Image (cartoon, rainbow, N blue to C red):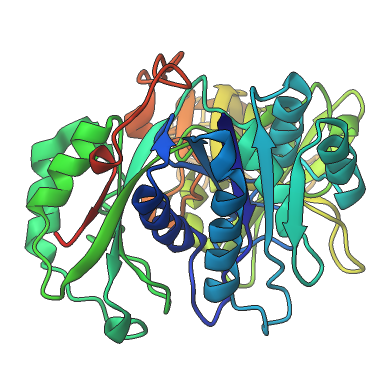
Length: 448
């Protein structure tokens, strides 16, 4: 049988990682003789969901096994989840879904809604019952939603790969010991085959997380061969317990959905929206830049936060009348603030003319004249000429800003945001999905 095992929400801020649960599950399945129809799938869900985990990633293992093994496979999966979930932490709500056969179109649609919007448990359970899948959940069971979404997102369009190397348990919670120079060297050699290794503005290494989770580093790239090659270049001063290559929607903009107008914007939904800038941007405490856009249906605030780095400078240079396209998640309104789009990137579609008004030049000596008062004209302090009928003159100013797409620094990008290096590299299909068996040794291993 073809069996899809989706699961989510096993970790907490205290530690753990759902991808590590997948790594342990893979090892057990290999010992049982279970085969794999695809690379392990790491599906990043809506990054704006208010209950999201750190990376908001759900997992799916697509396996092939004898019908008689189903109960054993199910029990092993549940056992790994129970043993490695932080069940005592409030807000950790693991869930797993088991679906046999082909992935129904309705489950695929559910996945897209979960990546681009908000869905509820009732909807998920209705689909699970309809297609006779099986679900197991703990605490509030919210992980069932992510588990079903991970099954439904088969990554038949654009996708990337991520090799995650895991630490030995005794090193969890301690500073990661990676040779920075080896990451810089790898980044140069791999060019656009990998992405988001180093932040160019600060030199900060981006492949290593900062929390107490089991991840030593994660290398993102265009092919499994690329991330495995990059992995071989990294020098680590602590042992790699194991590694897994995941196929993922990381870096694909899968979360963004174009909306036709401001009236269609919904809280917590990631959007692409075009509008006309109204007024001048404002800088608020903390260095955040707020600007407002308008269309025929209304207006909405857009925010580029201090972490946006160079993107803040672009936002500050906008003026009334500019036509822009904003990409980002929608923050709901509060008592103090209106609904706001938190901008991930910004396309300047068309620039308005910037006009300033200057005092006229003296017609006799060419000196810039001074105002004699409101509606009283101008006088020249050099030669004494008076021009009571003269008025300020319009001057068109050349703008430093140009039409184009502008990005936040890599260090502040969300997992799903497509980085500049991936433009032009979009994949349009994946021939290996469910077409055969992938040896587990291709995507899973122990040690370095």
